[in-house]
Image (tube, rainbow, N blue to C red):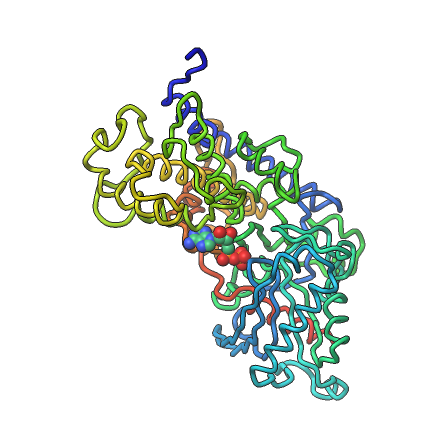
Length: 520
Ligand code: ADP
């Protein structure tokens, strides 16, 4: 056929499009730093660089009991957090589902649901004692009403004006509730509590990234960056107030010191001038509910990786004149938008990685893999058998419909898409290290000069992370580190301690509520 394309060339093209070389990573991190600077000096920039009014990080000695409400991901979470003051805490929690109808309906209905969930939690658990942090003067506490203080973790872009108020700027991650944007999220929630005559007061508003930062600081004794790699991606880091020039002459500036900044880095590249975007990314973006927004997030996070992978697989299924995958057969999973969950990619890679068989990557050589089974290299056979099992199970194919070559191609696509995501995640982390002056960039040859790693030499660099992707996706952190090393050098990368911010949103909200109570 005159339009026949060598199948190997088709695979090579995909490989080329989804691969990032170190030079590109350097260009990206430079662009990231530019966007940081623009966001720090102006409002209404996609990389919002939101001042959080959190001016200190905990050291683990904080105490008190607080309610925390967490909205921003797959689940809504209500919890009661007890900070014990010795870097430890206890936590009781309940998760509630947020239906698509609530996510995309009227904001009032969504916030009523939040209040109902807190009410249900309080009814099913003994209500916590009103908090009396040991540092609060009891005389001043006389008129403190018998309300339960609550910290709200709200993981959407908010323009914060104080610890307990902030305007919703935009929805992300599949939310689009009407009549919310432009309103104060704390007031929306407090009004819902008041409508139900509940004795709960929302005293602090915190982003999940800030929560991750604070909770890792509480349990680890310090932290410079909190970041999320879950449904979405974002990061918050400790910045010099003097660098947040858009604060103008706000009182915070006179106080000086440091303030946590919520970067909203998921919006990097909304201008579409930096990232090597593929047709698959464009297709995903066009059919998403927020075209042209959250461009970086759409290449990185759990909500989207499965969909990118699905689109690549579909292009191979649909390859003409001859299908290159599953003999052209589709299932609901591969044929429907959002049909393929990122956790399936995780399972596929796990199947490849685990157990016996040769480790390492395999880029399928189309001819070498043979028409069916016979061309498969023996050292990969066991791995591919395991992958095939997952594909059959999770992508809803029949046993005989998936060849080992199909399995190899699926695992390879998953790997390419996830590797790109992890490398890009490393760019964001490295950008923060560079912004804080902890490292310098390499030269064009990828070499670092003598100054690199000299700032804070020997110091531990604690980073708090949260999210299913970084927790569960095989080798995500390793690949992310590969990218960080290329950008800030092995010296600095070696001192980075990436640790799970356990229950970050709950503990972070509690720590923020504590800070707010002290200001009452
Ligand atoms: P959230 O960010 O909403 O608080 P998670 O951190 O659990 O919650 O992230 C949920 C996202 O992670 C979903 O998009 C889901 O597809 C993806 N996910 C769930 N399990 C895994 C897994 N084992 N490996 C990779 N991604 C996963």
